[in-house]
Amino acid sequence: MKRIITYGTFDLFHEGHYNMLKRAKAEGDYLIVGVTGDRYDVGRGKLSVKDSLATRIENVKKTGFADMIITEEYLGQKISDIIKYDIDTFVIGDDWRGKFDHLNNYCTVKYISRTEGISSTKIREEEFKINRIGIITDKLSDNQIVKESGLIAGVSVGKVYSDDQSIAVKFKEKYGLQETADSAEELYRDSDVVFIRTDIKDRYRFTKDALQAGKHVICDFPFSLDSNQQKELWDIAKKQNRILLDNIKAPYSQTFIQMMWAVQGGLIGDVIDFNCSVSKKDQDIPYLFYELAAMAVAPMLKILGHNYTNMDSRLIYEGDAIEFATMYFDYPTGKAKINVGNRVRVENQMEIIGTKGTVRIGDNWWKADYFEMDKTDGSSQVFNINFDSNGFRFLLANLVDMVSQNIIETQFFSEQDSRKVTAILEEAIANKR
Ligand code: CTP
Image (cartoon, rainbow, N blue to C red; front, side, top):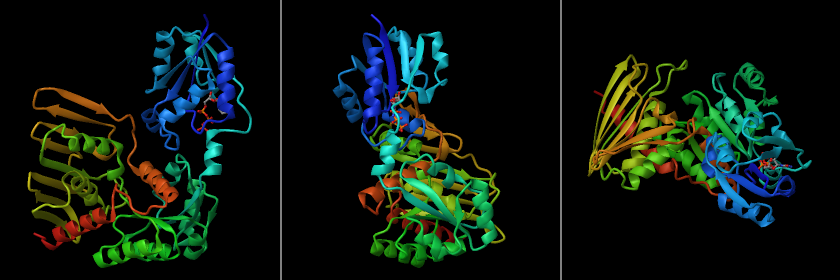
């Protein structure tokens, strides 16, 4: 009996998939189809998949060509599947030509021509609205928005605007964009979402204008150092029914989210101690204390909540700049401590101690792809998230989902979270000592 295997995501099942499965089956007697698992797609950065794994499996099943359906969960699984299922031929579309030649050591590899003119990507682009992102910037140093947008279905980067036109031109050239906008108004007109990455002094103005022009906004945190201005912006966003997102990645980090679920699921008992440190010595642009501190305060609010009973802080200044800060919080059931080093280097880690164990994420926790758990019963475990990126891609994916569902509030980092972080930092600065 000749045994065949093929793999795919099979999202928004279409004729090309059908033809592929039919031809794969015709190659032998027994066909195994590997459907990519949700985590596997996320792990390789494919965040655009619309159908659930159950739906995608069901659609493959309905064709009647598959004798067995398995899920593909990790890189390198193909070789183990080929050995395990004693496969004779591995079949895949010729868009992958050459990419799987290494499997020739284990079975025959056959590339089959694709059905012309159709793909899941094409259907997604036709069925789901593309949100054009306009960029307002005053620096050339960050292309994350350009790079990450390319990996998310439903967004594309359009024009760039800068008060200093020469920066817009250089930005456009550096990151291969199509056009600059001559005015902020032109940028608003030609965008669905405005991404604001400017000095703090200009954020309030641009955010307000963009919201009033009816655009969704992603702006670096905080929009303003004045909490009244912040409230005003949130109010405008609600009135305009537009999304306002702080560009703060930590609450979207997949590692942090899974760790939070583990903690909230009671795996380490009641939380008695939360420690988080952040420093970014290597930045070429000086970080605003607020931006850095928010990275550590936001996870604390997510894990322990907003209702601490007491806060104490110690700030060390050099001139006007805060070089180092320590903040202590008392919660009804435990304590939290946050260290923020601006130029002063601290170990970037997060540790949560519970009555039944400890979880920790090591160096540069906001972009780590694993966390560790040690239990009081002596057992320990490492959780691999299989995703080596900070949360920005997920922030964008969340934005696309919110736009398509016509909702303006996110649970990842809400208006309440944003305003609470600001209030905490204002209090820390006011308590200056
Ligand atoms: N396939 C095909 N003809 C098409 C589209 C896909 O033969 N028009 C094949 C692929 O080559 C692969 C299998 O179907 O062997 C599953 O492909 P998958 O990546 O799930 O589908 P795409 O439509 O290519 O998805 P995407 O656009 O997200 O890459």
